[in-house]
Amino acid sequence: MGSTIRATGLTRVYRGEGNPRPAVQDVSLEVATGEFVALMGPSGCGKSTLLNMLGGIDRPDAGEVWVAGQRIDGLSETRLALFRRKHVGIVFQFFNLIQNLDVVANIELPGLLGRGSTAAVRVRARELMSVLGLSELAGKMPGKLSGGERQRVAIARALINGPTVLLADEPTGALDQENGQGVLRLFQELHRDKGQTIVMVTHDPKVAAYAGRILVMQDGRLVEESRPAEARMGRLAARLLGTRG
Ligand SMILES: Nc1ncnc2c1ncn2[C@@H]1O[C@H](COP(=O)(O)OP(=O)(O)O)[C@@H](O)[C@H]1O
Ligand SMILES: [Mg+2]
Image 1 (tube, rainbow, N blue to C red):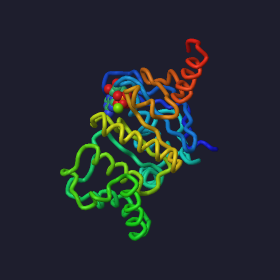
Image 2 (cartoon, helix red, strand yellow):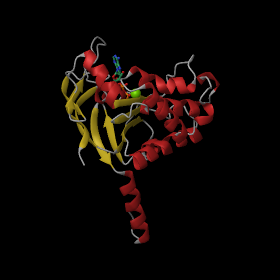
Image 3 (cartoon, protein in one colour):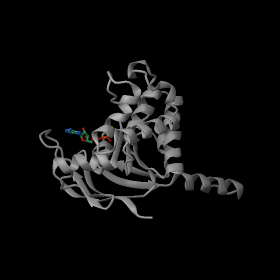
Image 4 (cartoon, rainbow, N blue to C red):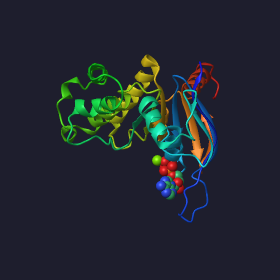
């Protein structure tokens, strides 16, 4: 199984803030195809900056980003926009839906901006709405939806072009616990059943625990890595063996 994302030596410095400390400093990482990875760490540690560089939304000052075998950090704006449309689906904390378009139009929009046929986009939107439990809401306006419903619409929109990687920045940050869990279970299903590669940013260890692997950031650097499932298995084994894990 190959890697979908490979980044080496990523550094990003925001200038003009009188703060010379890089927001991200010398970060290298790989995300395997089909993996669900969480980027965790306290507020301000550089998670969003790193995620944006992985998705071609922001450019590193140093280092390389490869996605789906293509080096993207040096692409022109035009090529980068094409790259994002084809390979990257993004979900944010505050949904960012278009208020005067109904649910199905929000979901279809990025598909219609691409080169796919309108008919194919319609079919895919209907499939996604069914998978995400949105079929009943197709004609509703975003303002009439709950937070959890809005985030599911945003996820469907992010998936409409069949992206190589789904990036999510604090996707449960604006949701109550129940709706947050719904979104996280959905990510797990997309990862497990559809092989969707996912990178999710969160400051919350309980949210990160839904991922297959957790990368921990601190002050712009990656400082730790863990696999929650293996940790759970280790604790279980320790309990069964009567030892302390
Ligand atoms: N556009 C920006 N201009 C200047 N500084 C920024 C900008 N965006 C983020 N920063 C700074 O970079 C650091 C990392 O921010 P960010 O990547 O948003 O962290 P996180 O997502 O972990 O909260 C913080 O110190 C933040 O204040
Ligand atoms: Mg952030």
